[in-house]
Image (cartoon, rainbow over all chains, first blue to last red; front, side, top):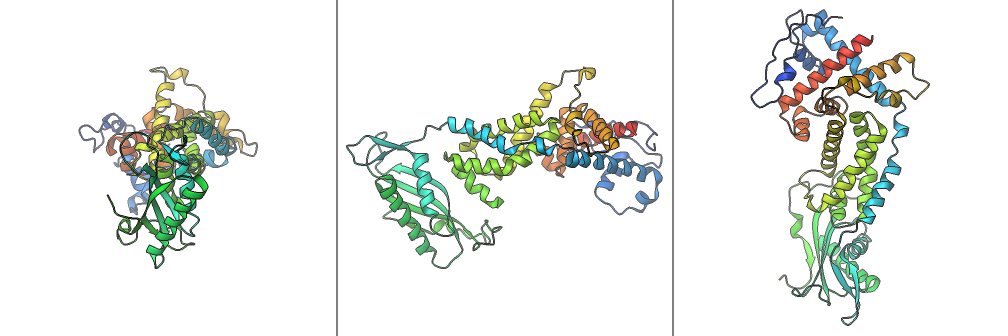
Length: 235
Length: 180
């Protein structure tokens, strides 16, 4: 073993408040005069240092780190560990808990004013997002549904929908947003029976056409949030 | 497509369980591997990741997407593991350290006896590290993270993270050398 020179020297770089002083106190100066911590860092960073390659002490130290790495990867890859980690069963268990924990959410009126039918906002939002996504390439994000007439807690009467979408990069964004709005309104009217006063569609991002999925971020820092199809006047 | 995470997280925050399930399905395997290397036990890793997801579901309405969902989840799992390691560890009684990782590493009959023994030695010396050393080391060695990222996740300075990784490496290489 090459690392037996053993003098315990305080290491550099333990500034005040670092909390690392006691760790570095365990640093070791190799027989060639270099600090073990520095040699490891250089080896890890793949530094092209002639001394590192020539010095028997340094290369022995780096080799030890490599051996450790090999043992770690051996344990992680071939250790028969993977089959014991059942992500599918875990997902089921998580979702069992999640589905029992219904968030209260806002009740929204269904049907006519004199009826007493309500739907949870999260449920209705799910249906409206799905409707928006029937437009090819459109992905729906936030969908908030509020009573159109403010005042009075859960009031019956039409609601206002605010939907955020990511759309494919096509000419005619306005038409696309209009189509989304139409389908959302249709789903609210026909499928849910949720009287809608107003649907605001906000385009929050523009994605590359299908097939080029990495481009979910706004390429040029434009602000597509200003494009949208809003009905009527903003309050 | 990872870029999808943001949309799914927004939906999940608004109470869409299906969106959350898609996130869990996507991220559970990697987080399980991470937790298993920190805790050395598949059973405990599953508990840690399950708790982390449930806590994420509860906290999602406050998640504003300042960081990516994956980063946020990663941090919750690391902190969960840190807490489990801390509560597991009896103060100042090294002899009572359980023999944790050996059975987990050792099941494949195809493994050579030698690397099996190395894995046992490694597992034992891992369990003798302090929780912070072990967590910092896993993040560096298995996740390849920068000291700055590790420091941010664990809530210490980059210099302290560097020191803990170094200390862990010293303990582990010494253990491996002794075993050889």
